[in-house]
View 1 (cartoon, one colour):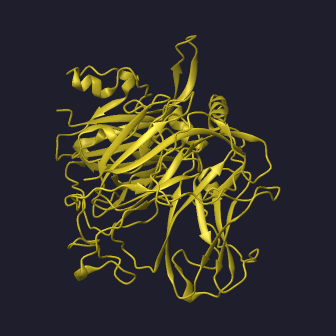
View 2 (tube, rainbow, N blue to C red; view 1 turned 30 degrees about the horizontal axis):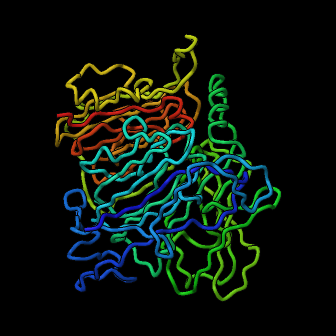
Length: 529
């Protein structure tokens, strides 16, 4: 049998400071098996999939694993592969000074990896950068019994000129992304998107694929990270982004560049997969005059702005906004004259989401098993000159040695974990873990999007002030399930729960790149035996 093989070297490029690149190259699969005729997936039956599997299948217990493997092929039929080993200049359409970028297969965002629910993926990643180590993380991928494929720097690092194979089962369906997981590196371009095809909870005629939303800086991410660290010492905010990109393109404040354009047809309903690949900013998106299910029959044909704006109520900032043009196929494309929806005035990134699959979390052990974790600004000692700097901490400040990883302690039977690993052991297999993350009241008034590898958790509740058990109003009955949820600013809290059922060493961290680079992360060890 043939493995699903996507070879993805990371190469350093020079690119203009505001992108107006073409849409990213999307990988295609070999032809798939025909769906079960008794429940065929189609425009009016997206809840169906094949072979008796559907949106109602409990994918935690039944993952529809197939005895079938895939090759990924680039458009044109050749296997995705590049052999460049050095950086070289690459000019795009905007006339700004060039800056260094790290790109996957030469495009931004990188190629989309597309597979079926139940497939087995074997992805070969080659680091062709000369001066940067890296690792590639598959965001929100469950990695069931494959923690070594998760792709975090301290465990699956890639030195310059080396390759690593990541192999795992697709036990989920939906949309995600992959990115470098070393410091702030992915802010310089080494990101791409993932589609795992499967059933859906809503019907649609056509799938438009992934639409990435990202900020862009006119300096490198490492330069911005350094400035952010200096600002942190005075509790000052990071620099604003210089532009906002939609699928890697936008005009800048001077009118240079190009808007991305999408053409739709009347009487059709479209699926649009949105992914925020920012390093810092919360995003609010809208399509003028359309609710965010694009059902063309309900609206007048014309040209409309697709808007991607930073969420100022979440303390995000950019010097410019993101725009793209959506047009109906029976009109001439032109600059839209449409008006925007009124944007929300509160920072509530989690929102009232209810999972389709009804699942409850046991509440009887919440108080006895609750693990309290503080989010604070603290002092850390710089070893080189013994001076102290201000850093973030989650439970404690984390500093993982690449020479002595957490799993090396496990393999050697050494349970005397150093404090700097910031490690918490979970409950036994089958047990539930309840974590309360509480911001200090004197922290800067910033929300923190907390991401859990392995990949997801149940959001039991959150609030904007100190947690009070008598008024918290936690929800254990089919709560929202996310891989990332925000702790509100201003001394806010977040309560989450997950069941121990996936052995490994896993990371939890703030998804604002500057913050995790400043130690806002921790790890937990699940079923070390």
